[in-house]
Amino acid sequence: MRDMLSINDMDDEIHPENVLDCLYNISDLEREILSILSDGEELRSSEIAERLDKDQSTAYRSLEKLSDCGLIYKEKQNIRNGGYFFLYSRRPLGKIKEEAKRSVEKWHEEIIDAIEDLESL
Image (tube, rainbow, N blue to C red; front, side, top):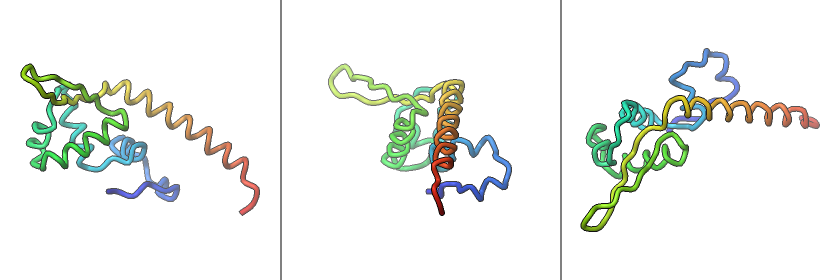
């Protein structure tokens, strides 16, 4: 897993492909899953694992993280003769961008307040 960026890392230019990494601390594998789901496809974890050439449990852990972060949808599908499976799809990019902007704005306000509240070092 990648380390979180520090303020010292801000010397470099921010690249669009790193924004979600920074906001959600996603891995290369999770970014690859987002790419697979970018075409509006709904896929099972087994199908995603196959495309990644990874074990299904590995893909499932990353899918759970992406779902918990709100970057993908997880929809339960019942099987007629019993049981169920989940279909995964990426949230619309516009929604992800709106939420990311709100998160950054909230963080900005909170960090400014925290700086103002600094008593001494």
